[in-house]
Image (cartoon, rainbow, N blue to C red):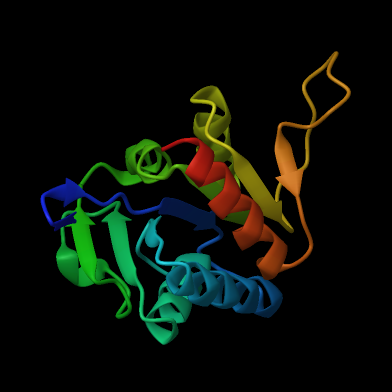
Length: 167
């Protein structure tokens, strides 16, 4: 965004999670999307179902912008709340792009695709905030690399803070 000749930086937050979301995780994703949108963040996700749909739906409630980085080659495979569908045709390989697009990542629930995305984020030193997601610890480390929270409000607060530090 350019305003008066100056580049105004936006916050970019990636939200990852299960494509077959539990009701609890879908609702958490929806709230996360709404809160991120109200903070002016642009939301990146995998663009399909479950947590990805929930976060996009919430973002629309909050007046936000959503980007879906799709596994397929068809824009039509995006959920109806995605503003900018990016068809990749690369399947799970798109997980890297979902993660790298964000200055911080919020993980909600998740299966193996989410685990892969968490691994990419941690490998790239992108902060990961988790709600009901994978829990693990690297051998020999006392502290987990993921910041675990229980509420969408805390997840968004921490993700925004982390993203601002990474500008």
